[in-house]
Length: 137
Image (cartoon, rainbow, N blue to C red; front, side, top):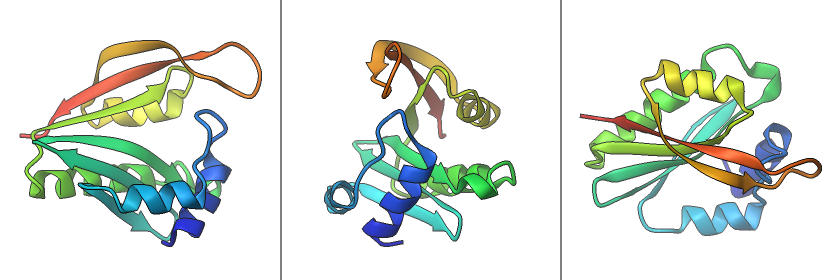
C-alpha cells in the first residue's frame, strides 16, 4: 500500500485518534525500525527498537471488519516483530474502542497502564488511552 492508500483507509477507520495523512505515513515508513503488514483490506504498522515493538496503528476497511482480517494482521505483525528480535509488544487503544480492545485481549494482550484524557475527539470529553502489553517469547 502506498502512503496515499494507507491514509485513505485510515480516515475511513478513525475519528479518534485523529487519522494520519499521507505525509505522516511517508515519514513514519522512513523511520528506523518501522515495518508494515498489509492485506487488500487493511494494514498493521509497527516499530521495533531494542527488543520492544509497538503497534502504531491497525486499520481494517469498515466494510470488511469482523471477518478475522484484524486478527490475521495482528498475527503477522507479531511474527514480523519476533523475527526482528522483539520480546515485548505494546500498543495503546482508546478506552471506548471496545472492538479493538476485544481483539487485543483475545490475542493475549493485557492492560499495563492508562493515559488519562489522552485522545481528543472532535467533540465531547477527552478519552483515556489503555496501554496493553504482550510477551512475544
